[in-house]
Structure formats: structure tokens, C-alpha cells
Image 1: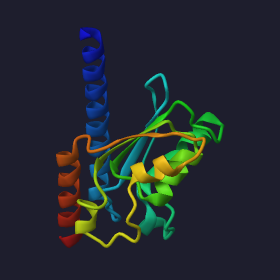
Image 2: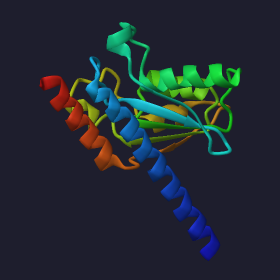
Image 3: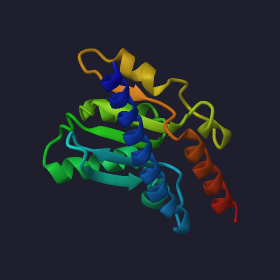
Length: 169
């Protein structure tokens, strides 16, 4: 029983450390001409960081350039396969329906996020779809993706506040 608890604790610590690293990376966008609070990173099954990106919708003038999609694009190019089976995606905010669906189609096995869409991101702009990442994952047939929510949520919420201050400055 103690071993199982220690393993769970070490997994929580791992997710927390990776999310903190992602939030730090994403906050670097706040000093650019196109700041964004949305970032994503992908780790392979061995724990190696294979891709990291933040949202570039405004810079690219492309509505599909969310942080998660950008990270997935980098990761599949890097490994030379459309499949990210065994990988874990971290996102500063709960993936929208497009990003969650893309994660599932890429065969990402676990999605971990910080801030929530309905409670956190919706404070800054209206959300066009009222569906959670877990609901999308649960509706998939044949493909399963574990969704872990609200990891380092307070830090992710602060990232949104910092982003808002940056764009209002």
C-alpha cells in the first residue's frame, strides 16, 4: 500500500513540475508582440520533452494555431509519425474541443491541464462551445485519453492575469 501511495505522489510531483516548466515557458510570450497565455508541451513515454509551443493565432492569422495544435505539429514532425501514442500533453489551459480532438486523433494517451475553460478562460472571452475536455474524451469510441485537470491551476490563473496586464499595457 505504501508503494502505491508513493508512486501516486511521485506522479503528482512530476505533473506539477512539468506544468510549472510549461507556465514559465509560456510566460516568455508575454514579452513578445503577440503575447498568449496558452502553451503546451509534449513528453514521450520515457519522459523526454519532445515539443513545446504557445498559441500563435494572432501572429499567424490562423485560428487553428492554438498552443496544443502547434505542439502536436512540432512533435509529429520531430518523431516522423502522425501517432503520439504513449505521449502526455500538458496545457496551461483546458484544451478546447478542437485541441482535445486533435490530441485524441494524434493518439496522445494523457492530457494534463492547469486553468479551466469554463471558470478561468471564460473570464477573458466568451467560449463558443460548452463542452469540457473530459466530456470529449468520454465520448470517443475506441480511443481513450486520460484527462487530468487543474494541475497548478493557481499558477495558470496568474498567467492569464499577467497576460491581461501585458495586453492592456
